[in-house]
Image (cartoon, rainbow, N blue to C red; front, side, top):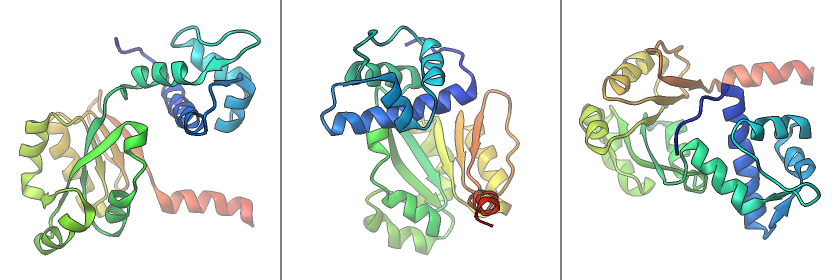
Length: 208
């Protein structure tokens, strides 16, 4: 499918809709109203309809959206019609937890390899994780050989930028960054920053 130019927040919300639709499919729901889908995603129905309007005409007035049809359409728009290969750099506590998470494949992603600078750690974690954990000096060759375009960084702050530079140099176009480093990347490379401490700090305002 030809790539559509969409606002970043719209893309994010489409991924939320896709997750909600997947849950509806798992429970046997075949048709969902805009109100129910919007409620499941935590947005207003008007926002949902506006977002879907960016990518085509979906739904039937009075009947709602076909769950499977809409899910497949959004998957195609997001590039998730086939499993998207992903590499992870950093297999510490956080990286290990992410590798154990079983939900990525349901969302269209597959972590095909992980990399770490601790060679002893590499040897001890490969079998446990079910994903090959390789020395970080093999990262560049692996990314090139397997045509990887998406990566997760879960390394200490001091190593974040250099890892990002290596990934971008080998053609990675999208990075999910769990390190606390603020990454500088060329135009055309997308970085989503996941700062757990900052997220906790922001919600504490509402708990006080």
